[in-house]
Image (cartoon, rainbow, N blue to C red; front, side, top):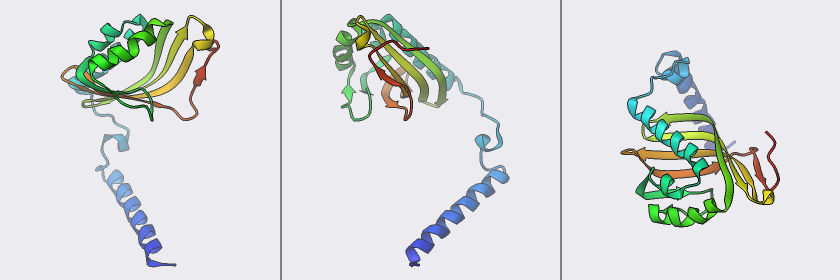
Length: 171
């Protein structure tokens, strides 16, 4: 066995022992001992903003949605898609899309916040006038909220989650 492999295994073992030691000594933080720290007022407000933003998609009004966004919003609809930068570009990109839908509903399953960051687990339903154009996706949304506005928003598909285009969605 070469020294690189031994060093890597040794480093891994040392790191594991260090983490276990911190957890048992109380240095592992609240998550390690099962207690959760209280949410700050900032976190409560940021969760409220993101949750209401997600719920307001049901109104299909891109100008209402844009009110939640910073002027220089950076939005990535899904991995590999180019960023949509700026509120005007957001409106231009999504206005026609929303107008072509009969209904939009985002089911928020869980929400977490740490300071300016809010992450939600949700299922997005986009119902077309023609059912074959309907879409349903399991999403992890990642938002940065600063000064009461969403500045960064990225959506990620959940591996093994719902991803259905066309047809009715069974609930």
